[in-house]
Image (cartoon, rainbow, N blue to C red; front, side, top):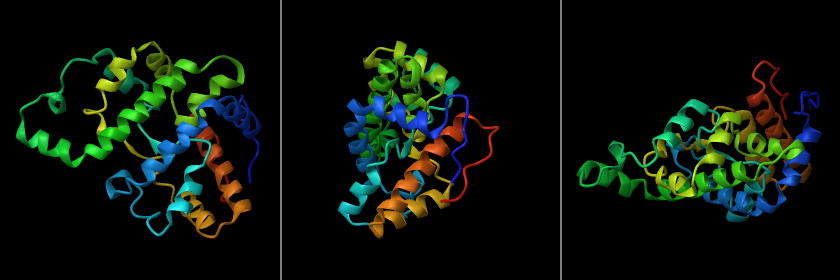
Amino acid sequence: MQDGYTDGWSPAASRAAAGDFSLGIGSLHALNRRFLDLDRQDLGLSGRLARLSAAQKDTVASCPYALFDVRLHDASHWRSRLRDAGVPRVADVPGDRDVNREVDRAAEVTDFLRLALFFAWHVAASSGTGVSRLAPQLVLGMHAHTTAAFARAPVSAILELALSETGCLSARWRDCDRYWSALAAAAEGADEPRLQRVRLYGIQLAAAGQLPLRAEPREV
């Protein structure tokens, strides 16, 4: 497997960033596990993990990065939304029966997104200098400008966004069947060496997402 990223994005630097993030890793694993229980087709999991037992899903959830994506790579989207937080959008306006029915159907997603956005805010606000500054990018795929916007925002603004932003939630690398199939197979087979390789593959995917001109990681 490739191990040749530079400009601060080598796997060694990524592992160090994850180590600096150790205080939040338990919350991350809990969020990953809750996301796996949302195994809905529109989120990009498409039942790929449905065959796994609860214990095997726990194993999958223990990756050192988010298995969910909330579009944090899109700095312009989140800067705009954080700037306008508190201004009602269509999905925020009470009294609309169709909207309220949709909110009821998406309650689990909304609740999850509220936790995920709070977590993103915490990671952004806690990011420092040196290797630890990589944590938002590695853990959540967060653009540097998104990190700055979240870090400046009051937590009340973050929590207000969950209802209107459910469309942002999906599986991370949802189109990378290679990653998800390998992760599910490693957990199902209790194959710890392969699981470690898949986790590293995810770190490489995270790095490649921040450095789009680099070659994609090799197959696990």
